[in-house]
Image 1 (tube, one colour):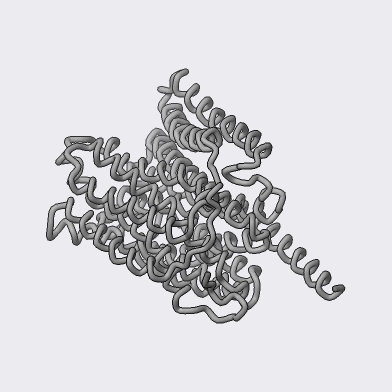
Image 2 (cartoon, helix red, strand yellow):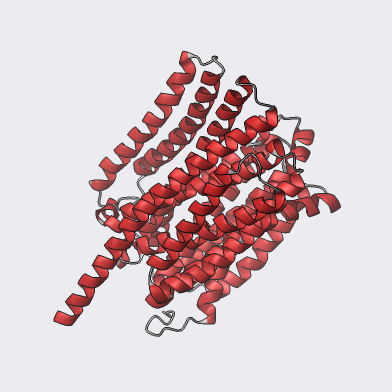
Length: 492
């Protein structure tokens, strides 16, 4: 069996192609998701649905993705990387063909669920390839390379969707996506090396069901809690709203606790909970959750505030996000290289500082932000986020024993999905509730949205500070482990 050259510090072209082709799987998934945001009006007209219903095109994809991510540790054991790559690719291609044909909205949702499964498989696959085959001194750079590829999708998705709809029916946009997957399939099949697979590996249906039910319950609970808070400000909250807001998250936590109970006593755990004996995984998971709250909060707050608060068009709102996405992708690559050369302290500290400064200034200037400054501020915060998140993720995994890295990867990606759920739910609730308070106190509609933006940015600042606390713990634990390993080598 061939192996990528771990003993040297060079990275082969074949490994680079393998990482890029595996990164293109989630890239195309995110591209499709952001592309559909522009196509929503077309879907609403054709299927005769309202705005609340059409959002499920995105929600069902994210839900399928979050359910599949925890299975990545099992898939690494049971199948070769090439096989996992093909499963992800064909799931997306089949979903694309079904979406092109979809005679009704329910069939389109099924197609989007298949595409969500593809993305949920693709993200952990990329990190598993990096962790399995990359030289230790190049892990940061290669993780940044993968993040660069994925990070380009939100930048081009809206523009791509708008261009496709302007020249052809919306269904043909899925044909273009399918063609991209087909080309990438050829590149990936030629570059991704096979590795021994454990044909005896099995997945526990009970454990999978508990994780899936936990994620679904928690996700729905966040949405119910947000609605309950909004109705409370309108003095229209019912006992049913409160019950759902409390019961669903509690049920989600109970399902996760049951999963932990069974997994810790099983020789066939879907995710080996022993990874949480490593403090680096705990600290990285906590930091990633709060970083994702900020990132998903921004993806909701910036377009909403731009259009409803400052009166910008949807095109201008998308334009505000574009330079930040591009700058963040480039920052991930540079920060990864810096991680390899200097360690995590400099890139993580600098990234968190950039996020704090940008969010703080936007919070205090929420009533007077201009179009140009919003672009600059978003560039700064995205540069900080991308320079921080990838490195925190990488440092959380790189000291794990080889046999636990896939479990750690699955665990971190699962917590990432929880952060995404919390980010959107919390910021949507904050913005809506503050807007109601502002209107009730005599503010104009636009000023009440700006007030909501100020409070939303303040919530994100608090999340950055919490992320910084856990990132500091992570860096300290990593440094301590490194010192101990050096002493052990010197003693030997």
